[in-house]
Image 1: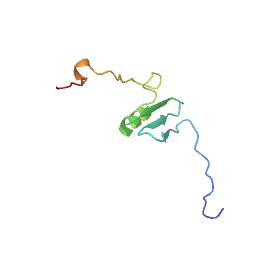
Image 2: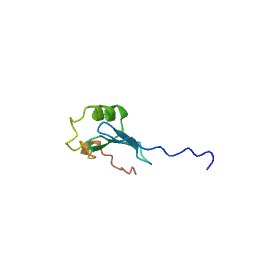
Image 3: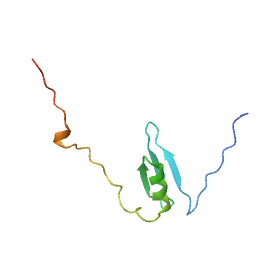
Image 4: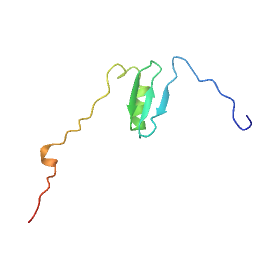
Length: 80
């Protein structure tokens, strides 16, 4: 096993937060020391959420609606 560093034990405790990259996405998953988890695209919002413990850790994350107003939808028009 030359060249392979020895495995290090992971930190544990009541003040250890973790951040995981979600492969194949631009998202990060924050895991608070209280076991609350939430996904983020913005690292600033992620850190604000982690460091504001316990504020916001017992509520589900906000959802984004994918519905666009009908005036924004394009229609295909055939010109003779």
